[in-house]
Picture 1 (cartoon, one colour):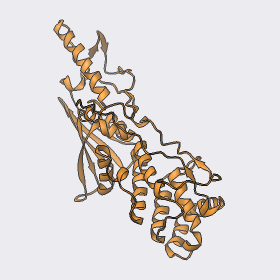
Picture 2 (cartoon, one colour):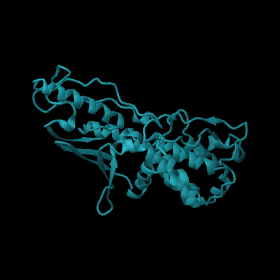
Picture 3 (spheres, helix red, strand yellow):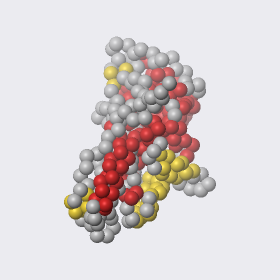
Picture 4 (cartoon, helix red, strand yellow):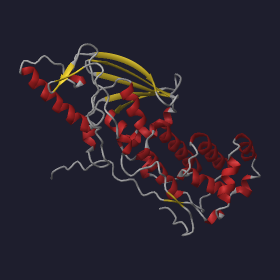
Length: 337
């Protein structure tokens, strides 16, 4: 659907957006009871011991959607103040497949239930081994958290100052993540977790859709959700070209979002590059718009960004953002007929 870029256009690869679900890669945390020691395969583990089991990585399309629904539910309370907060209950496997930020928050907050379908299979094997040890007369507590009798509660502050994690676990677990984001905006991400929805199915109908996509892309940046960012960028780039008609207000909205919420990198972010290119191509028109003049004063680097982009050939030299339609995230259910 995207208009082909001229052959002279610079090619931009977004180094942070990968075709594989690298955001689901994680390291296992220590799984130790609060008191005493536990054993695994006859090896005693003290409170300071570390479970060095390799991280369980889920590749895109390698697990069925129904497998993710077997993972535990966790609540994500979104919004800073009542009555604007909403709590979304999400399957941990889907959340952690997409967001490395939530993986880190859950682990640092003490959430020890499986984070992916692969972890479920692993824990099932651990439970079997533990039961066999108990039947043989060995006094040992299972490493599998859901089968243990320990209880714990912990609170941690995430790397992002706008999000904190609180998990409370007692003989099984319940978890609550607090995320200082706009609840309506997070709803798009929630929909994306469970179905293709607006991000992948519907076209761009209005200027406001481009602004929404920019906000979603920056949300993906804060959540460290690379696959989600890739899907948003694909939709944006597929419709955003030299023929796109947009009001000055919408252009300024885009400029403000990418400057304030997307970091500058040595290798330019593809989304930022597209926005700066379009603004530079319409610079003569924007100079007559009061809000654009205010943005130049509020964002000192904005003028530099636009000057660099204006020197690349203007409207006809759209950055060649290489983004293919996102691959299927789940393996076919394989229903027999």
